[in-house]
View 1 (cartoon, rainbow, N blue to C red):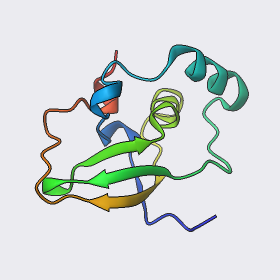
View 2 (cartoon, helix red, strand yellow):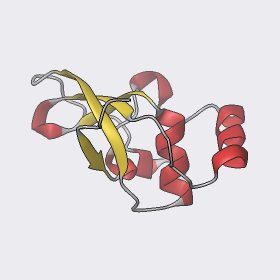
View 3 (spheres, rainbow, N blue to C red):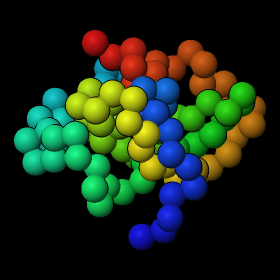
View 4 (cartoon, one colour):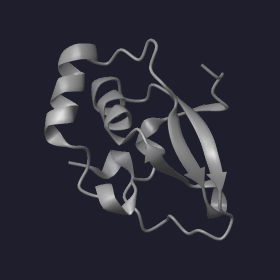
Length: 99
């Protein structure tokens, strides 16, 4: 496993357009039952960095939401897999904005 590039608060990550409602309920419940707020051996969340340094999740919505809800403020490992300096992600919901 590669060493993650950075650690960030998962509440600040932006959700992709296809997941603005949040994670799949059953997948989320399964992860909570298996791991709780534990992030030991968790794969880095793959993100794209856009304009103004905003980070949009590509892979790991369920993990980000789980850690944010179970261990608020705990940083998670991320791996920046793409950089799009013109992409504006400011209108996408943050993980912290999910109810």
